[in-house]
Image 1 (cartoon, rainbow, N blue to C red):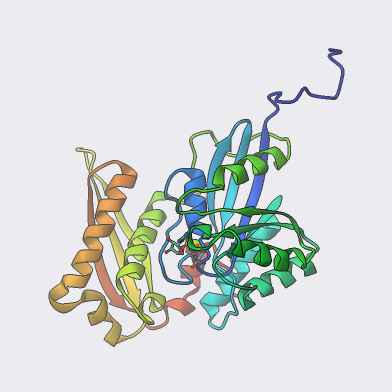
Image 2 (image 1 turned 135 degrees about the vertical axis):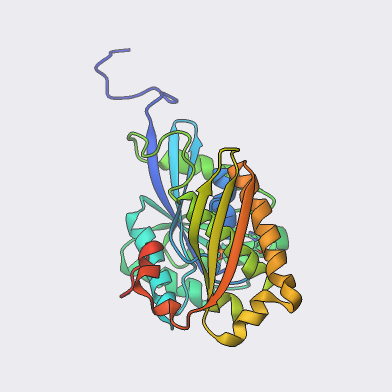
Amino acid sequence: MDPSSQTEPIGAAAPRCGFIAILGAPNVGKSTLLNLLVGAKVSIVSPKVQTTRMRVLGVAIRGQAQLVFIDTPGIFAPRRRLDRAMVRAAWRGAEEADLVLLLADASRRGIDDDTRRIIEGLKAAGRHAILVLNKIDLVKRESLLALTQKYHAEGLFTDVFLISATSGDGVEDLASALAARAPEGPWHFPEDQLSDLPQRLLAAEITREHLFRQLHQEVPYALTVEPETWEDFQDGSVRIGQVIYVERDNQKPIVLGKGGQRIKSVREAAQAEIQHLLDRKVHLFLHVTVREKWSEDRSHYQDLGLDYDA
Ligand SMILES: Nc1nc2c(ncn2[C@@H]2O[C@H](COP(=O)(O)OP(=O)(O)OP(=O)(O)O)[C@@H](O)[C@H]2O)c(=O)[nH]1
Ligand SMILES: [Mg+2]
């Protein structure tokens, strides 16, 4: 072949790198999908809505392509300052991306209001998106046709993928398609980097996940976890101190539980998971403090890369 030819043979090893935003209503499985694609836990997951609060990067490699996924908080009608900042972070993720995935719950019969809001936002921004219907393990294949047609009628989507982020069904087809579509260019991250989240922040997120899983009603939404101390020891172990802020006095005994049982159980679960993640012995120390206005504290937003004035 003429060496000056511009045409690469199919399969030639030109590197590709694509930034791909995962957008969707709360609880549709965005973070579950991100973790599966990356092959490691980089973003926390819970059965409750509004688990993810900030933009989280996860890096996956497929063939010659580095795929940088941007997990985003679910997009919903925001009321509080924190909600507005979360929704703003999600849209910023879309602005940074080469490709946008709109993830939706396949077990819903139609397009819900939150998803509708995202569709309108993408249209206004003049963006196309790839529709990913997730949770197909919960529905019969036949019922997906009608839902797919409803989405198609929006004129926004270039393709549709049907997946289950828990069983993995369809996920590699999606990854291959994204790898083929990633723009040519050098990789953005070193080969072994999976996320841009510092370990101390990821450790605090893991604790927040277990609080989300073990507490109910308004309490998970009234709390945040901040990294406080991190001490490495000669024997390879690490002592991690974190503080849990709640908004009101009456929430503190709920987080502690009867005789301290609740916080003990959260601490044990989080410690085991952080230990597994860091692959070293972890001593986790948690304390609970009332700080009525933590969600109005500017520095908290800066730490999470959120826009206080969104
Ligand atoms: N059955 C089923 N459940 C799923 C699937 N994907 C995710 N889930 C569950 O859906 C719930 C929400 O998952 P997340 O990954 O936290 O959802 P999210 O979209 O990141 O949610 P937010 O961060 O709150 O916006 C969890 O309980 C997941 O286990 C799926 O394919 N099938
Ligand atoms: Mg999430």
